[in-house]
Length: 96
Image (cartoon, rainbow, N blue to C red; front, side):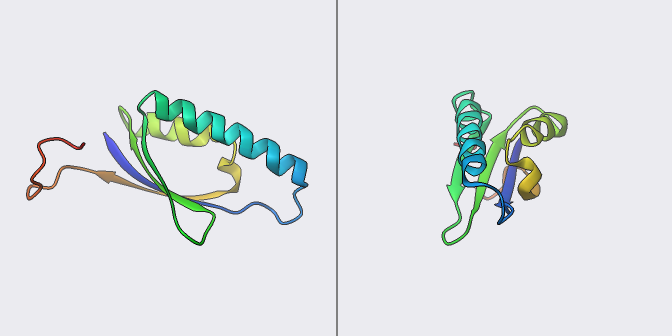
């Protein structure tokens, strides 16, 4: 199943810089591993903000929830999820 996921990060302004650097490094490693596994298919930064739009390819809602809630930045995110399905007017046979 494909999901469109928008994540807006809102770190506390008083979070120590060392803690910010540590959590960002963990987030990067976690997200890159999910990308290598093919579960996090696309990752796009939203210009001008600390936010992204992503496409996840997972088996079901529960798997998506588990992956997203495992993000180190999860406690500091506003997340919006939209399930996707193939459009009947698409000229592509798959979702590639």
